[in-house]
Image (tube, rainbow, N blue to C red; front, side, top):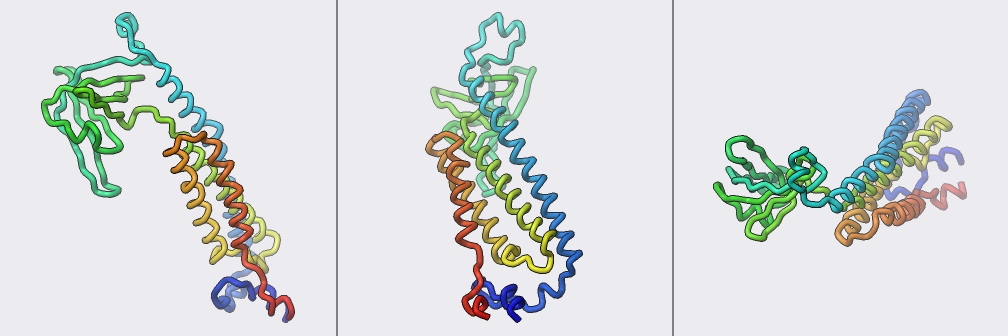
Length: 260
């Protein structure tokens, strides 16, 4: 009687689902645990890739772009692409469509009769919304990509322009690492004690913890991008907050169950 009360009487805020544990065999529970551990390994690999490859690569690319100088005539003759070259192009057409996830901001450009290409933007302003077919623009190219368009002193970065937004790279990496930790713990519990996984169940604790983890990671990452603070502040803030939330949200046995 005491064991049954301990396994079901957790303060989850709603009546326990009777018979759930009985409907799941130990073999099925262990299989779920194996899947969760495999998921944890995959997300841990993503976390490692973000911090070992993606974040350093983006940081190095941005530093190279900031250090790039205008191409000399000799550099252009040699076909160098790691300097900033300037081209005078003609606008053929533009796309300025704002529709939520279906938003599209593009400009199709031509160079005499020898080249035609399309560049994308993250938003319509300040230049794209002013452009019309036939306008002449000045394009800055770096490493074979058009990174800036300008006209009459108004400049706008294209989607190819390197940006100092490593905070969001870090937010993705931290999220992957924390999801890996949660999946591993939940999976290990199902392997070790398949008959008693409380309180490490998906509903409500696991779901609440995953939503909280996601909200914290991006809730820290986005303001970090806007304010320009260093990327390492994202894991320094997000990880302790999520750990504290995991402890505080963990369901505890009710007093009646403890005294049974």
